[in-house]
Image 1 (cartoon, rainbow, N blue to C red):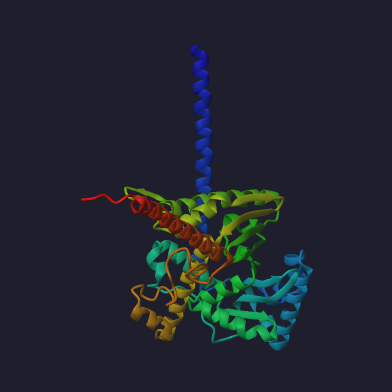
Image 2 (image 1 turned 45 degrees about the vertical axis):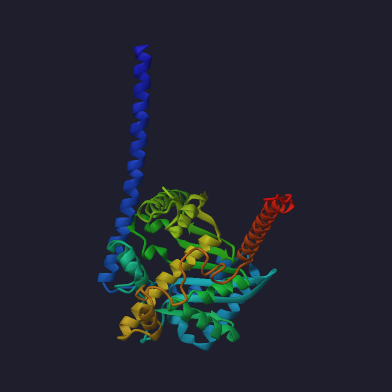
Length: 418
């Protein structure tokens, strides 16, 4: 009996040691990757370099677009037409480099509407300036200094220019949308999302240039594809690797990174419903939504591709849109700082708001803005308001009926002589 008990304890001890070793190795691998990324980016900054990216002539070529969107031939044809139009307008664009490319379009049934390509990188324009966050902006105050520096450095390394390829008659609307976004105004984008579902794709053609050395050769292309509607959305991150072994390593890093991100949102930013003496309290709703988003995402390896998929509801869409608003507001403040004075929009916000210019003047706190009852109404928010009105009307009718029943016996009671 003692031998059986001893062997059982020995096997349990070995299992615990093996499990602890695996967890320790994965934790060390994630830390090593993050630290190597920080060192590599610091080296690029100290040497005065930016991400070279890939030649614009290659990234915007027919074959490259077909390799990314081959499952949608109509989209490829329309993207080719807007690229050809842009290249014909300014042949110097072929001499630039693309560090990231954002493709957006909308659908009406099966028809592709309003396709556009936002190419981010370096183009022949001596007046260009690097993008960056403001030193006293919202992100600098909310995040740890090391995390803020890392995000700021990534934005710096993307390049200096944003070039838009789109249909000629839609150029003005796309320029206006980009101007609004870069000044922290998220409402125009929210209106476009409610008008028709917005489909997007973000491509990093040369991710190895900013990747840490230990996974530099494990990534060939990073592609983000998704859609956003008023009440729902979806997003797919695809990491394309050269072989299955590299894909397995990237999958492990994705899972561990998701665990760390969930811990940060849950513990550091209070992303959970608090049980208080007066009831439940959801003071950091956006952190709660990010935790829920991470909990319901799926990570799968498909041969040489690692796919991270997530579905979003309206509240999670609002959390994402407000994150974009925060980032772009800081970018606007940085541009104003470089120009030597604040734009009138930021000055106006600082005068009438206690936020110090961290938000646009239209910003409203809470999960129902910019998509929802206090922002741009969506079919779901309208239905919720109608349901609330119906329930309220039923409750008031029930209350009136009870009051009438209570008053009826008193009216029917016979009068008594004094």
